[in-house]
Amino acid sequence: MNSIRIRLFLILLAATSVVWLSAFLWIQQSTRAEVERVLDARLAESGQMVSSLISDRRIDVARAPTAVPDLEVAGNSPVSGYSHRLSCQIWSLEGALVGRSGSAPADSLAGQDAGFSSNMVDGEEWRVYTVINEDLGVRVMVGDSHSVRDRLVRDVTTGLVLPALAILPLLAGLIWLSLRRGLLPLDRLAAGLSRRTADDLNPVAVGSLPREIRPVGTAINGLFGRVEAARNREKAFTSFAAHELKTPLAGIKTQAQVAMIAPDAATRTGALSRIQQGVDRTDRMVRQLLSLASVESTETGYETDVGIAGMVRDVVDDLGRLASAKGVTLEVSDSGSSQIITDPVLLMMALRNVIENAVAAAPDASKVEIEVRTSGDDSLSIMVMDRGQGIADADRAKITERFFRGAGASIGGSGLGLAIVETAVKRLGGRLEFAPRSDGGETVSIVLFRK
Image (cartoon, rainbow, N blue to C red; front, top):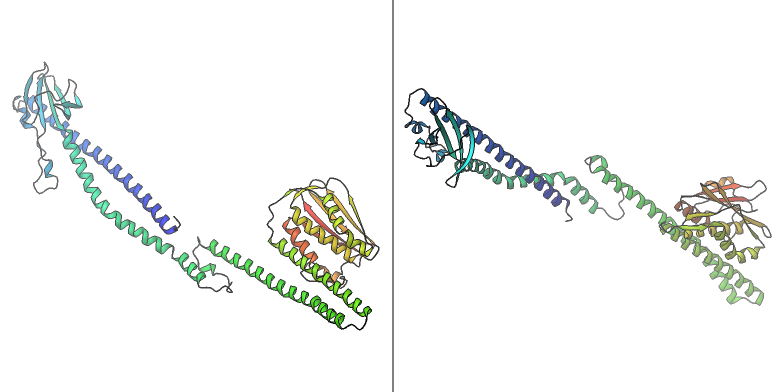
């Protein structure tokens, strides 16, 4: 059942029905108890009256049973159907029947004890009140049938149930209308959102919503904000990527034309060399664009125990040819246990880009040092140190922005490496730090926290 309105309606209707049924049962029981109390009082009064009349000699013992009062009610009364005469028997204390009313059975209505009792006589249950008159040696029994009492209670409760049953459909309709009116703000919110275009990411007016729905509006506004930010990033990413790819492709095209019309082999060789450099730059940029897209779309969830020192050495081996081309030496040192629970894919991307940037920034025939350092049980740092020009103070605030290249950036760089690193490290729950070296160069540190 996907409809909140129908679900709430059924829940409220069921709750109302349970309350209604409980009230009916309570009324039935209380009505029965009250009727029993009133009729018992009448039985006791009648028994005491007959005993008193006999004691005062105002009525003959044989005629005493006929003096029991009726339950006569006016003919136009709705309970006139309950008119009947109480049954009365007078027995001697020795067990002989002295007299009885016309409606009384021939067998004794009750036992030997005084007071109230319920007995089966001729297959019918009777409620009896017994008075023992020791002075006259008689036992007065006044009773009425339980069937009459039950019919009275049943008819009273039926008279209450029928109007209540007639009210139930009206109550269900009122519940439904109340739910429709109560859920109107949600309907209006849904209608307003459905009328929006894909470009309309303006916030929803949360202040006009009921208090219970405001968290929904706030969550929608938060989603709109995130979608708009993601869309702006994508627009900027596409624009920058197109611009950055346009430059090397134009150069490749120009050099290809030069090679085609070159008058000599030296000119042709030079043009082909520059074409190769342009292809390498374009290839590196495409790889970094794919890496950035992969980092941004990867959900951190695959985590395992990673040996950082071993991973660093694997990356160094992969970049060995690039470092050798510049005569750069890659030196790895590990100060202790470097095991950590993390996502190996994201960490590998971050490490590769940091070390590749360091190699590109390092002077020819210099050294790039990679140190894995642990800080107790809390964190682990991977420090990559080069001897290049370092990062200018004016560029530090922008160094991790996409496509940003500082004043001392190497020729052919795309400005994406550190953006990839920062995105990956944030997803790993770590921190990226930059610090200038006192003897020249820069130290880039990836700080990871143990879980």
